[in-house]
Length: 278
Image 1: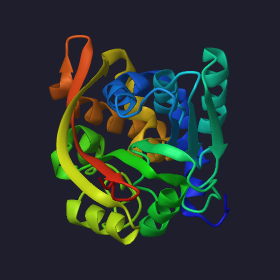
Image 2: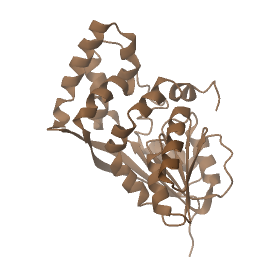
Image 3: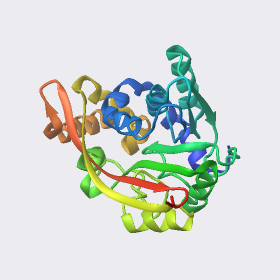
């Protein structure tokens, strides 16, 4: 992990700790993706989970592959990997974790039957190089199964906080073409990246996944997650309260009783390491 990598600096700072603090809420929110990725692997397989965060998808796939298989999670964030290791030990599951950048990590060649990810592949400095490295780590019959966000306009829940706060505070801009949540918004770009990396039988399909979490977790989400979560601690108390009050109102359309509900507009990205003949 290089100190000169902006993503390493970011995910090992307060951003990584915020994910750890909100682990239970985020796991609840993204639980449908755990099930989808667990369904993409089989008993006895070796699985690599890229950008595994605090380990929810790694553990879900570990349950599916069972004791004859193994699931390995990799993430650049030391705080999240530390939490993932604790969770795996508590669950006694066939899972292990590496705190490293999947773009450069020296994986054992042809080691994995499946490479999966839940919103963990949009942050590479050089996506084509990263996916070439992942392809080398996959067996010839290895499968790629990923979920990435479509565009910001299709995901109003994910941009509600920054849109509401914009008149009151300057937030870090989301730069087109740069690593970040919506870096894979363009399906043609995703296809070109995987083709350049040598993957075969590539599919990039639009899917809309209903997500939900308890409304009690919304305050923590507003205060700690996303671009707003990084800016709020820098504001004086009156301004901070004004921003939070305005942003809370922006989430009201998503609150149904005791539950927050929204639709995650995603790409389901699948491919094979090599063409299967016969």
